[in-house]
Amino acid sequence: VSGPPALCVMFATLGVFERSFDLVVSGINPGVNVGRSVYHSGTVGAAVTARSRGLPAIAVSQAVEGYGIEGQGWDEMLKGVHWEAAASVASTVAGAVAGHGILAPMVINLNVPDLAVEDMAGWERTTIGRIPPRVIAEARLEPHEGRAGSYKVVMEWGDAVSLPGGTDGGAVERDRVSLTLLGHLSDVDNPPGAEAEEAVYPAVAGALDGLFSRA
View 1 (cartoon, rainbow, N blue to C red):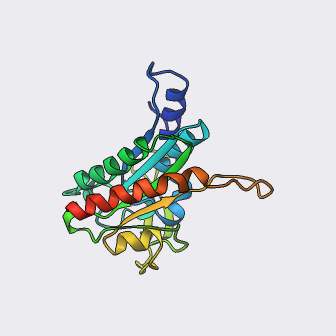
View 2 (view 1 turned 45 degrees about the horizontal axis):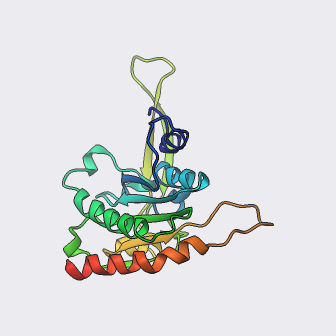
View 3 (view 1 turned 60 degrees about the vertical axis):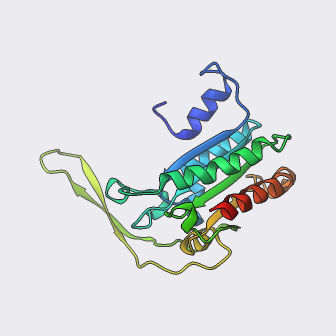
């Protein structure tokens, strides 16, 4: 599908791919989706779209060297990334959700450090951090040589900062898997509950504890 990940999920729920399904797993995204990147992430967007169509969903993002600023990693950052570790964590969580029995609409956001599972410091349930690990300090247009009216965006990065414990970015910074239960988008007059997320959480927590006890 040549469009954003959310469009792929929407098409799938409309039967374009001629198969029904019960769970959406989006990713593995190159670069963490923590802090404010959660709000504009295509990976998380696919999961949110699945929930809006009545399905549970898991968004999975893998830390890369150079931070993967604002949720994206580029080619030079992706050498030697431990994709199999993120896949193992995602598989563990997906298995717990699928085996829970009641597949209610929900979104789980997973961010995985760039380490082998046995080298990680475990996992934790986190909140969305308010401080980004590194901000874009400046962005400017530079003309493409010989191509009138065509430009590239050149970005300058600010300094890296240490993130608070208990936050999604802070957990990854401390070599831990971050698991965040994402709430629903809603107007302020009708705040939704989180019954589905809280109901499945013990099963997911038990599965992750089992993964790291074996590592």
